[in-house]
Image 1 (spheres, rainbow over the protein chains, first blue to last red):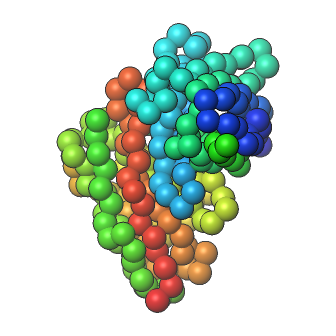
Image 2 (cartoon, one colour):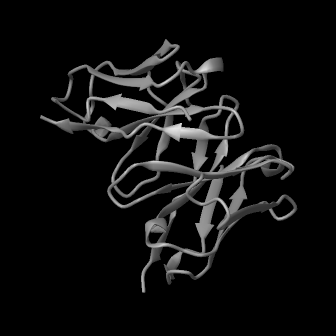
Length: 118
Length: 109
């Protein structure tokens, strides 16, 4: 069974940092592009960041570029998102998900809530 | 950036009725990289349809996807009580980037 389990969310202060992690199991993690997607309370979905299977290529949404950093550890089957210079507008549920063969996100974690507030 | 516009924003229907949800792209989507998701309150989105018209594992055949170019449709042939939810379309382009539509809520009339 495929499982993606996020952790690391919580309350962060404006200008502060948080590090999210996603533990993967049940599939060949090292073969998949992995992603972070966020959803603001009561609103829609935003594609935040992606990383190729080897980690060679990375994408960031303009809204987080220069502040967030995605990484992966294929030996540990884990994905990370280092979130620096947090802003109130970063408040959201953050999901990790893997990319299927047609750019679809075929498995999602349960999400971790990040709240940025002083 | 490809912008996806979903319509209607809300669809009010009764169980057993047919639901037709639209997703229009600001430019043509190549390589059939168009997917649909269902999300219920408090849950993560669930993949329904990938590559425009292929059902994901375990998805009932009352869900179908169609379309090409800039116009795509998700059809639920006969609504079951568990189908009342929010539905999102998503496209995947170059540079690992994807975008989502704003969602269509299917509610009980």
